[in-house]
Image (cartoon, rainbow, N blue to C red; front, side, top):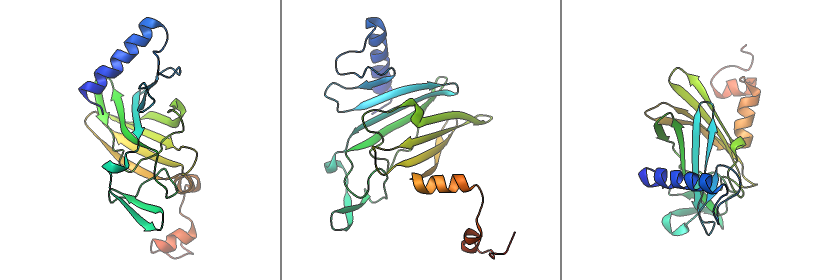
Length: 196
């Protein structure tokens, strides 16, 4: 949940924490990380040179989603789409919101298919927000609850954003580390293995 209610709630929490010098009961002692009393919803805001990242997760509510199985006891899709964050079992949490704040503009990012984003709470080092070019920024995120790690990437402007990458860490790291197309990959793309 975000928008006016979320903005007001986040501001109220920050102001209350600053006035008291400590965080209220039920709220994490990690600066910038907040959890509702009862531990149901966790959210955080992290500040970077380029702007801020605001993230929120909540427990996975199976009744609010359509699940399909590919094999016995193996969940294949959630709401008809592939998903990330588990090894086929049901998620325990889901990413509800991921927003980037650039000056006075707040841009909501696509978080569909993103589950079990962290173990106990989000961490600033999970994210990297940098100026990409001109009026564009790039957010990269790493997500995992200890298994089935995945990465996401978004290009952002003051008026919107597009998710440019979402996938398992092994695949994403393989593509990034190789940094070039291998001969076997050229065959898949229609080129000959001997092409330079």
